[in-house]
Image 1 (cartoon, rainbow, N blue to C red):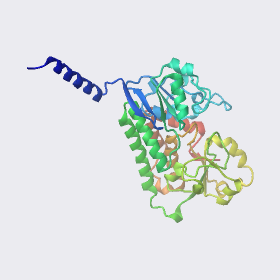
Image 2: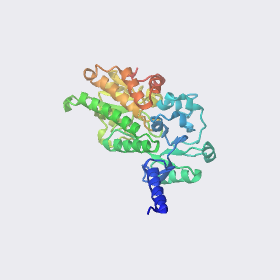
Image 3: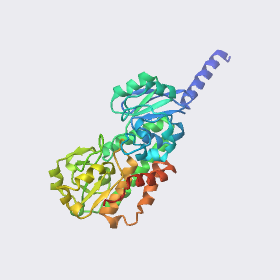
Image 4: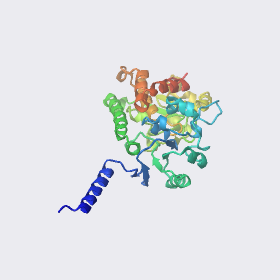
Length: 367
């Protein structure tokens, strides 16, 4: 004889199983990039992205869900102002975000105003951080789920792997894993294209290059560089500083070292030009063959309020056109730049590309 009580229990178990399997649960437990397990709401309508993580967050088409910005992301009002927002591609793509409340007064995710954050009532907070204590503190002070993500350098296989893992994690949090895979595939397609174009260049024919004025913790002069600058690695260029480290990072060298290296072509980060312009007027840098031969070029800033991955890709194509013009003669740089920026920021990427290029008067020979 059919037992109604047993039937009721079975139906309840089946309903609960379907409830969990179909994602109807109100929370998911996910492990962030620092190995922290965090309960995340399945429906996310309000997002705060700090610690320079807004750049990656906006790649998921969620500009309408952002509730606040950081102090450095405000529009820059004058040359002496600390805000850098009008020099950041992702803010130029979505200028409406300039008007959002500012949640901190520090740099890179520090000195938070917890009352403002709580008042904004975000469902989650993304935080670019490598310090578990910083993430835990923000979560305990606000009572809001805080998720650590990776916002640091790319340019080597190890760093790219961490970056991709972080994007996939963000995709899970935002319920858009397909978008994470799409962006990763787009980046890898550019890597493959650049590698294919330059793979036949022999060791003897590699052009020696140098990136000067590489920002880290602010602007620096000619002796600030990057031993694994992505745009050089992607174009099989001979980075004269490559032995300093096997990771992309900011490094300072002695003036005498740069003079001894004497690279054939020099590229400059525009955020440091005010310092470099003075340096280039004096010895020993004015005697460098690249300076004497007019082979100095301005690129888009790779490191500026953390790492602008879209800028690095555009810079790679510019580097390729400069040092191996015959291999990149089919590339229209502006067309490629718009294409890359759209991969990161959708249709808003086009205006962002032209705005950042104009802002820095970049992707051209330095006069």
